[in-house]
Image 1: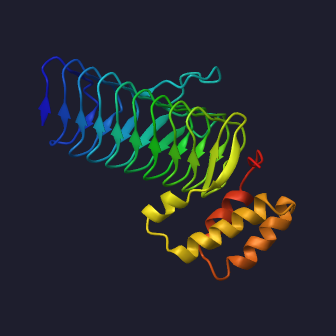
Image 2: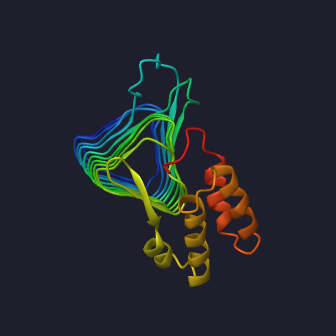
Length: 257
């Protein structure tokens, strides 16, 4: 274990013997940090935060801070972080609220670039990329492999589906279905994230089926219910479409369409 002498560690914190803590860090009560995690100088991990293995948290980040919500009254809430994440300079990650379930969760193998903000009660999956200054409001869900461009902002209680891509400086005010590219002001669904799918090993036939699904939803004047029924027929021969169908059927705020 490597802990700089200027760091302040609460006695209740649990640190694996293979953790590195840089100068001027503060590790608060109820914090647990897994093996191989590296904390750069001047990071604050406030309280009630479980951090997995092999994470890298860069300088000036604020992790596990009280949620910025007027309904929060000091109740016990948590932040959970998986393995192999990178949080660059100035990232802010808040714990959950009692009324929101008490938990903010971030999965594994995510990249959060400088000054990203993850608000209270958010659920972020695995393998995502948040570019500089992305902000997601409270209770937002972000699926696996999603990419959010710089300065994108997501309203509270919304969902960004798996493999979706949000363009830089885009304001998301409705749910983003899986596999879609959304950009502009106002936010508009442009196409499917074909390049991202190719990079992740989706075969040409599957990508063609997802492209056909995009046309059914956005180009053929079906109601959303009619489009979903069409997709369910296609999904009998293309399992990947079930992810898209689930993202459509689980939408509570309505999709960008």
